[in-house]
Amino acid sequence: APLPFALLHVDTGHNFPEVLAYRDRVVAGHGLRLHVASVQEAIDAGRVRERPDGTRNPLQTVPLLDAITTHRFDAVFGGGRRDEEKARAKERVFSLRDEFGGWDPRRQRPELWQLYNGRHAPGEHVRVFPLSNFTELDVWQYIAREKIELPSIYFAHQREVFSRDGMWLAPGAWGGPRESETTQHRLVRYRTVGDMSCTGAVDSTAATVDDVIAEITTSRLTERGATRADDKLSEAAMEDRKREGYF
Image (cartoon, rainbow, N blue to C red; front, side, top):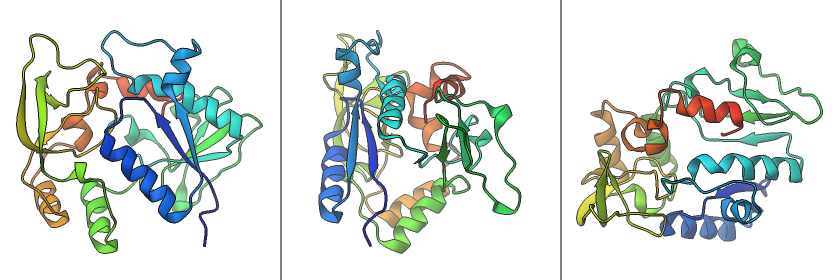
């Protein structure tokens, strides 16, 4: 049966080409409805301002909230998991957001016996996280079981990268590398994918789903803890963004 709701992508303008190609291929192949909320359009309209460091991931909140308001979404599904990051560990499966899209941990409802309350006042909405209790390993085991197609970026491949703040970043129009930074080709893969300005690659030889599962089994770092610069802005970076309306 056709998917009964639309998909929403907040496009930072600094996405990996492989990810956009995968998005468009899946949408076309399954006849899905896709709404794209553009960070660049929000910048052009003066709704948000470019950051000095070039990263646009924190700028997604305004276009996201604009899209929710425009399309009058009552609920928005996301792939966040509690094991990714300590602020996300506080989330409920049904996360109530106020009329400004903000998140208040004190207003979250109890979810006893997996009973979920989706009621909300006019102007409010809920964020729904069906994978809350999955681990990264659970996700990959599910991918293996269901034979789900993924962008090649999640598997080991040769890529031009440079080192910044302990991470391998991909060069691009977003602002890297700087004059003091040199690029090199390395065999890497991505454990999580945001935009190019904040998503670090990891050295890896895992070229298949089974290889990735074996690699994750021995890892002691979550994928966001190892590879997301936007989470390292401060101790409470993610929680601060979520309170403002970030996913």
